[in-house]
Length: 298
Image: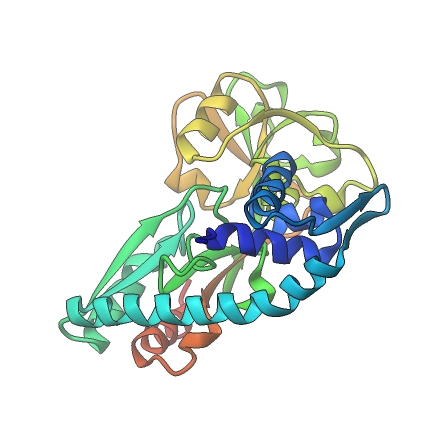
């Protein structure tokens, strides 16, 4: 019998968290999709893995045995996959770098150039990910290293080095009553509808809604998007406003959208991240060193 490793990862997340809600955030899927995956795995195996109740998801006897063995299976597969991809990249001399939106801003090009000088003959290939993939492919091994906005789901099991921070501003429709202001207090935005990332991005979505900085005031979501172009269109069309890095005013300028400084909200941070399995990978570490060397210049 062949079982999709994605189902095993979903099973393990639920087994460890005991909650479909928390586990869904960990594996970047919606709760209904995760429920469907667990049922699919139970059907394939022909056993019941969880006892479901209002208190959460409790492992059955067969479920406990599977939970004991699955980490070894997944670790072996991850090692094999990473080694195979590393061999391919070594042969092609390409380092795959994941990123979201503007990555490390203007420093991105300098980092890539510094890496080329440090590793002659190698090329850093930049790969942009959707907001539904907050690790930009690093968690799944699709990239070797990533330039990311912190915090992001799953970063606790990865290596992360902060590079710089910048203020969070607000992106508004040009026709919004507050668009004429030079500076806006975050409290004045609490009742506004926000354009948000998909719910399965969990803490990453909450960070960009500043959910923990509203003193318990509920968030209103006017639209959900997962790509910068859709995000800009939603704002320009008046479906909501959004917090954004200050640099978005440079990287995502467009008619119909204005950016304004916001007071009363914490800054956003950019970091470079890589898998612990690459702690001794000299190519990955060279890229990280280029990031750290240039961080003070941003």
